[in-house]
Length: 315
Picture 1 (cartoon, rainbow, N blue to C red):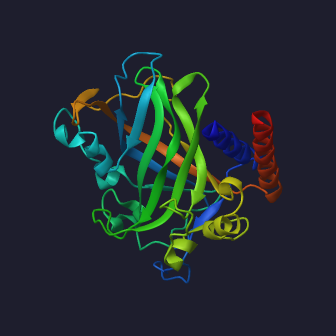
Picture 2 (cartoon, one colour; picture 1 turned 135 degrees about the horizontal axis):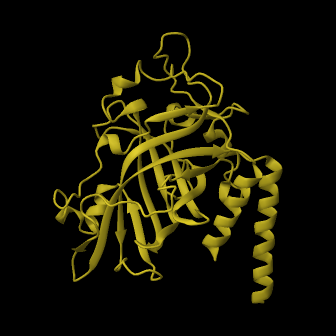
């Protein structure tokens, strides 16, 4: 019930803002040598060919029978369910740098993309590391291979790195997952949504340590950083100051996404427990929205009303 309320509130907040707002990135460095440390106004962060690993905690091959699903590209999590025992065979593998990075900055329609806030030409980052923005993700949900899956928990962690093949990187945001909006008529295409946070340990504490992290993403309409907006609303219900949506762009024709070579693989990951794994390559885009203060106030009042009603009924 709590997850349902959270998801409904975020969906309402995003729709109340009416559109995905423009934003820009400010790296704090004038790599272009023209006095600018920021990009032009952007509409989306895009990625293509990301290698997605789905882990089913139960046989996922029966339509109508949902099992717990974990989608992730984090190797330690994958290995905890036995991925290391099948990696390198049957087509299974870990995500390469080019399969875990933002490779497109989609500018606002009618403008020219300006990437002065990044180091020289994007090719400087090397193959698969364009712009130096990479992500780890961990999604929790339920579903099966036949009907698809919906997610109501987890996160996307976004990092900046000067070398996409290196382990050294700086986290610049956490995108908490609060729900999934399926596309009617296509169970394999959906929108994942949630809120932007700078508390990546989820202990209620600001986890940023540098101005670079706090200033990286900026709302173009207000010229406030996402961090400032988050901090201003940290005590508000759900902290919906900045929301995000991920369009998974999975097979718009309604067909199931094709497996990589391995298909669905059953894996014994210890103590007689079995997981079922499959891998696909996906494209997607992330948009951000900053709702009007009145919208946030109405949502907060609505959540409060729901809470009061539930307590009244319980009494």
